[in-house]
Structure formats: structure tokens, C-alpha cells
Length: 438
Image (tube, rainbow, N blue to C red; front, side, top):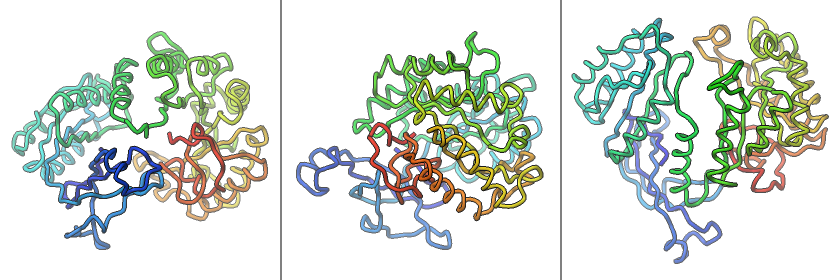
């Protein structure tokens, strides 16, 4: 179930018939007999932001992977939500704890009374500060118990796992998890057994095999975790997944540009696509924007390792990412769009001339960071339009296909945020294994 409803807006429930056999006509008797009813939540607002009343099934269109789904009923979403509010009160929250309390109180004022809310602190270990209740007074007492733990780290993943188990045990009808976090370090203990448990649930209920891939990521391991280096630390997850669910999902990993022997371990453990992200092309900006990569590996060595990885996975399956627009970040970046596009295109040609197809994500400045404070608007629209043109031209110039793992290319086919660039590319004949979304 996908939830996109907001508590202060009127929502509608859309029971959607998902056809078990996609090739059958949508209204055939056999298709209806094999249909599985699903419920999604959607906020329906007019141009001024006000709720729309009297919505009918014929007013709503639902498409999945480009296929129209039949809407059976539309009704107000009156069933209360069960909301778990996970709050970072670790040492990194010290400067923000007052603002966090204020935000939670405003959240409670909007939610409680109709919807049940619980408050869980995630410093040191998940700790319930207020049990699930609609009582605003009880919840405010929970807010009063929220203090920064000065010597504690954040355990968000552990809290999500425990909260999800609690929802499942109580058979919560409309469960929602909301997290408030800082930029502190994540210290959760969740291991591959927890991942396998979650994937087992997905495999059990995803009868139409709509989930196609998984991505392993979590930052660089510069020393060791659990006595393991980066390749073995992430590789054990892939190995456990492949042993339990052989061939069920396409495995991806986002990690450092590692030495060739470590990259081979990823491949041996069952990973199919490797993302050693280079972030920004320009040499000067690389050292300023990615100082950790420069310090621990170095730009030239990072690039050399990307090429070595192509010997292991094949060039098409090594897809380094760069952040589109960050090369224009003040005060260090390029001042003109022409300069930025020229630099980034140089990087595209460098990799594509060797058969490696980078992808890119759009830079979204974080307002509390130095770059975010200096660049609240990000890169100009002209830059992004011209980058899409340059990217498409580079693929054509080097005779390359769109990168695998991001769905089918062509207008209107993008399936998630980091595949939007696929909309601007020529439709290609891509195998099902290559086209799956991340």
C-alpha cells in the first residue's frame, strides 16, 4: 500500500484492480476473476489547494508502468492512521532539540484526536516516550521527556525495524512511520537477517513481481565494521540475499571505487551493477566538494578503479553517478552555465569513450549545510535543460545505450526520481533484466 495522504487534507481511497495477467483485456471475465484489489491514498486538491469533493472513479486515472488500472471505488479516507514518530535525540541533536520539540507539538496538534500517535526516541536504542494514543495531553508529556543524550548515537534503522514489527503484530490498519533526524552518524545493529526478513515479506506479498531490484548503500567504510572491510561488509548482504532468493532481484551496490580484488568480491557475492560515484568531474571542485574521496583515494585513482571495475562487471554495468548542478555551487563553482556544461561534458566523454555510461542525480541543496545556505535555489533551469541535451548527445556520439537498471527510455517512462533523465533519451530495445527500476 502506497500512502501519500496528508492529515490536514481530505483524502480519497482508491481501490485499484491490479490485473494478474497484464495481456488480458481490462474488462474481460477472466481478468476480473484473477484481479487483486489494492488500496492507495491520494490527496485531491484544486488549483488553490482546497480539498475537492464529490470525486468519482471516472475522475481518477491510475497507471502502473504505463498500464491503466481500473478504479473500482472512491471514498473519503476516514480510517484513522497509526503514526509512529521516530525522533533523533542523539548527541547531534543538541543544537536543534528545542526546534524539534516545537515541531512535534505542532504535529501533535494537527494529528492527535483523530489519529493515534506514538513518540520514540532513537538515541542509544529505540525508547518509547509516549505510547500510541489520540490523547494530546499524554503526547505532550512524551514531548516533555525528549532530551538530547549527549553521549549517544542515532539508531534509526533499528527503530524502523522494531516499529514495523510492532505494527505487524498489532495488525495496524493504516500504519505510518515519520522520522525526524539530524545529520548525525547512524549506529543501528540491523544485520542481514533483518534484511532477509523484510525481503521475505516482500516476496510473499508481491505476487505480481513488481519489485525488481535492491540497492546496497550506506556510505564508505574507511576502516572496518564488524571486523570487515567495505567489500565484505556489503557483500555479505548480497550473498545472503542470493542464497535465500536466487535470481529474484537484480542486485546493485553504491560504494567507494575499490581496488579490483574487492570489486570482484561484489561480483562473486551476486551484485550485478556497481555504482562507484565520482560526484563532480572538475579536478579542483572534486577536492573541495568531495574531500573524503580526495583524502582516502584521490581523484585519478578513483577514476582508474572505475575502469578496473569494468573488467569485472563489464563496462555497461559500472555506472558511476555525478551530482548535476553542484559544479555551479557558490562560492567555488563555475559562474556560467557554459563553463559548467563544458566541464561536465568532458567527464561524460572521458567515461563514455571507454564504454562506461554515468548517470546523474539532481543537486538538491540541503538548507542547513554551507553549500545549501549559499545556494538555496540550486543550479539554474537552463543548466539542467542543457545538461539533458549534452547527455543525450554524448550517448549518441559514443554509440551507447541508456544505462541498465533504470527502466525503459523514452518520454513519460521515468519510474523514479533518479531515472528522470531517461525521459529525454530515445526509446531502446532493452531486456527486462536491464530495464528494471532501482
